Image: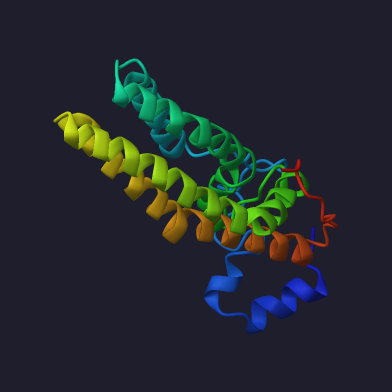
Length: 199
């Protein structure tokens, strides 16, 4: 199918980073993904990290005494936060590789509302990080007092995880959403602004 006038114009004036958004900008016709595109899902490495964190909290909950109490408190604020991240933020990260390769995204119309929801809920998600951080600090204090080095390290790891989300993952997810919306516009795909779920 021939390029639209807009696509041809963009190809002639756009910087290379914008050209990556155009269909076929990177791959040759032989390398192009099927017309349906690449499905978007949470990257395996991110899913594994969340699984490991959940397992770590579960191990701490199984501990007797104050470690278990602190871990249960942490779980009550962490689990709903993780669930929402996995609904609206983390799937957007799965679009980064195909976007960077100029490949089509299969479920563009379904994925873009996630970005809208993330942008709307980002202040609340960051506020939840503060609440989670207090629960993590409590776990760290108890672990220090009981000389549980493994749980001290686990608490530090949780803090780094949250910082990585704030500095890298949330911004990357928002940028992925913005790039997909631009690609949809260039391709003439109408994407409604729909918010996913509610809080």
